[in-house]
Length: 296
Image (tube, rainbow, N blue to C red; front, top):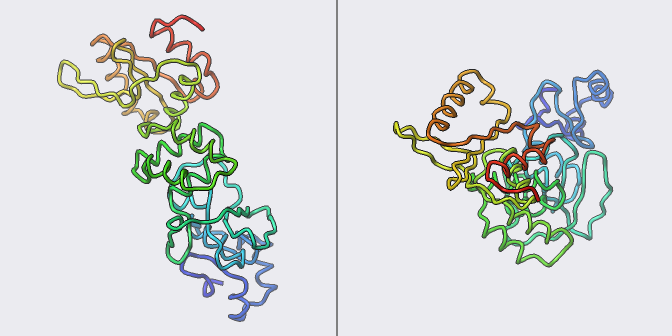
């Protein structure tokens, strides 16, 4: 069925039938796994990689609603806004007057769009980054939500003032106050979900927040950046996520840097994913102790 594939790889059932494809052929391809169903009446070849924009297009097309817009998680993937793990259903926003039937693979939302809320990407209407974040923040877990804002601010995909102004312009609705709180909880400096999670854990335990991405110049002229630092205490925090830090060369470089900083008088505390996500109390206690703070 390669001749009925569209430029983004989608196969639309109605177009395939119009082109003379036997419906039994489509059903057989689905049963044997050569085709994968994305949305009702929309498929992709199993061997083809589907892009976030193609998924957004499939979600919009399957609604049959002219003004449907890809939003929430679906729009976030198009913009590269980080989301919690897991594929989940696609999301679209439509007018309140439109008839909507919830499906396993598609979630409908019905909040009005304001001027400037939508961009068109290769013919696909998608909520712009500010609107996408505002929609998304109340419906995902706190750490993931604040990290989404942190990453978007750091990459200059959005500005904090832009987000707050957009919230101010919206008629109040459930979730808007929570979205505002999460925007204000972001600093736009964290370079990983782990750094955001560590900052929130310290904030929630009323521990002073470290300076993020703190620049240190050693006596030999070497320049380092600590994930977090309390320079008045000469205490640095490093958050070791998976990936680059697990590679041998990076691992050796990290150890050399740490030894040099310790020789300069710094105390360096290193934390892993497990420490932050599953041992918050011990993480907070370690930072308190390094800062000379008594337990609450």
